[in-house]
Image 1 (spheres, one colour):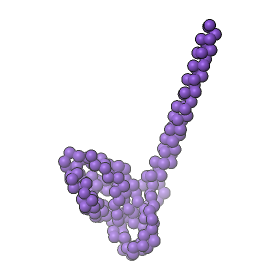
Image 2: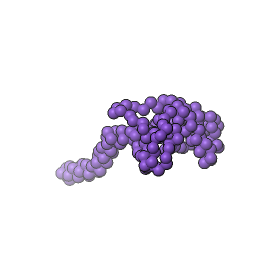
Image 3: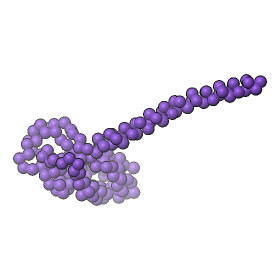
Image 4: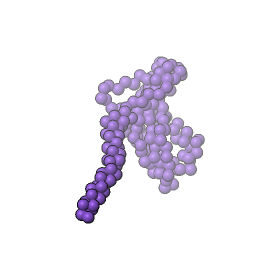
Length: 168
């Protein structure tokens, strides 16, 4: 009878090994996905992104004579920001800055984004959720931000894009 118990114990050990394999494989896949994100995915999102071409003659806020016909639009993605609204609610917003076509960043050069972040936080924190939940309120906030950021970055930034806009 002792043999039967050890045989059964050996069979249970094999079953446990079989049950661990899918978990181990799943864990390895998740780890590899994380490494891939860290090495390439996250870095790619922080770089300039390109958008479809446009056919307008002049981009407002860019240098005079900037020929914007068939230009690829580039944007700098800012990190997500959490902002306190006036009525006790919160806003999580991610913004991209539309760069003028003639703005060229040297290899490894970073675009200074602190003034834009400051403008975004100070402008949006003065609003209420009831105003920003309406399309007109968001559009007014976007227009005001575009105006203020374009003034802070003359002939560099011409547009603001809301990439994420979540209120709670």
